[in-house]
Image 1 (tube, rainbow, N blue to C red):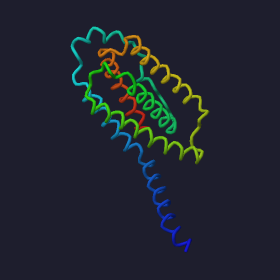
Image 2: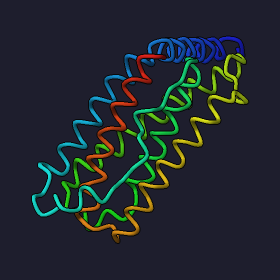
Image 3: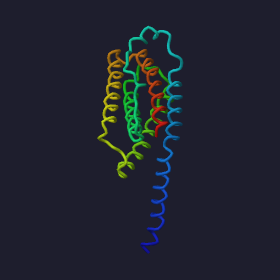
Image 4: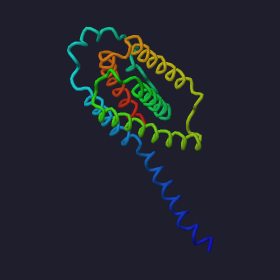
Length: 188
């Protein structure tokens, strides 16, 4: 009796782990689609850049996010995950002055959250297989660069008191992050 009830459960576990592995094997395809969708929501939520913010556009002097370089596939996944986590944190706070479309904001946040969850599953599966190298010097260096970059973004928003123009400038800057995400996605 017990064996018969365990069979469907065992099959379900087996199929779900197979599906998870297939998702991780094709993560680059899913990640690419989700990057495009997130970028689309980012553009939709604010519309055209406000004319009154043009003067402040040059006030943001960010570290160049486009210089992120990684050789190993696993490091690219970890960097993508870190960028997405940073973006999620930034776009989850102090959006009151942004004057953006609320639905697009939620869709953007949800899309990024889904990407983070998918990558966490795949990265944890790789850690179990011991294919990643968390002590890798290149990954640590890149992680530090990314942390500094996003710290600059947060500092800029805080300095400008989360004004509408500050958010618009950051929205433009974040679109560059998606260029980096697309480059990194091609490496996984």
